[in-house]
Length: 124
Image (cartoon, one colour):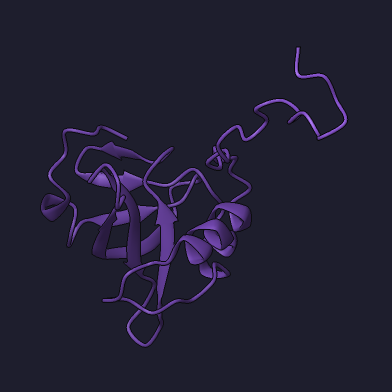
């Protein structure tokens, strides 16, 4: 999605699935903790329904609406974490897996500094 879009301008916009079926209205936008880039949208899926989280990447803003490239049923079955709270890294990971999206997991630092010479080994 366009990264120059103000996330506040997404709230209240309609969201549609890959086939053009209405999913609902964007209630909240969640930013990446490290970059501040909009990452998730919480979409109110009906009058008495819950909010469903959808990834903003690879979604697109088209003619003032959010086009989400997933089936409506998949979106409605997304894990429910409630809105108005911070998404933990574990919750985000669950959402990425739910949508079948690959993410670059942070790699642990390279701790292989070589073998240390023991007392009976020649260090040279």
